[in-house]
Length: 214
Image (cartoon, rainbow, N blue to C red; front, side, top):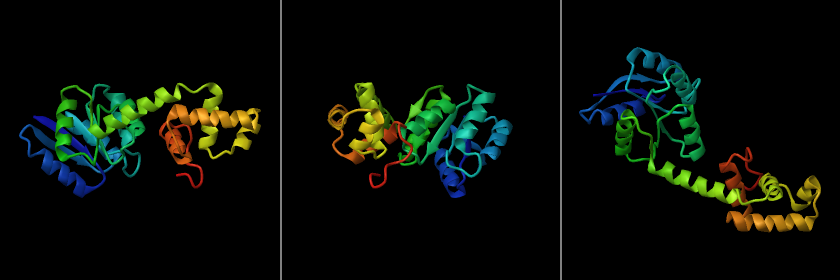
């Protein structure tokens, strides 16, 4: 029997998880919490085999709970079940101590598969996150082809800087910057300013889209 703790701040959602999970004879929910502090207390009290954690909760949030559990028990089996479909968020969750990441847009059966895989000691990622991680890896490969000046030009373009601004900031001619811009678009496979901004956002190179380009 796999004993499960659910940590999610929506009671109706938790009820749905519990009913679905307990359709399987080998799964049983032994505790439910609506925020991170309560989740940590119940984790200590119930000693679940797998803890299913949402990231977006009132208070400290799911990422904090993952780190608290991992600090006390590095081998704890935690599975994130989240609305966030960003590969970077999934990576941060894994670094915080999660053994799996499933998006809430996945089919319900995926959660059961993930619980069993994590309990068995594996790492489980839903298919959409795997696809996004693959795309991120391809993006990273393309970004690595940029020269130092091209990379800095790319970052400044993503911030909404004009060619003239970049030329002044990097002490280059406008023609050189324009050439860099063309090379960047060819190397990265981006055809529009918006696509360039979204690529920079995905890789954490800028904090927010330039006005009008998001």
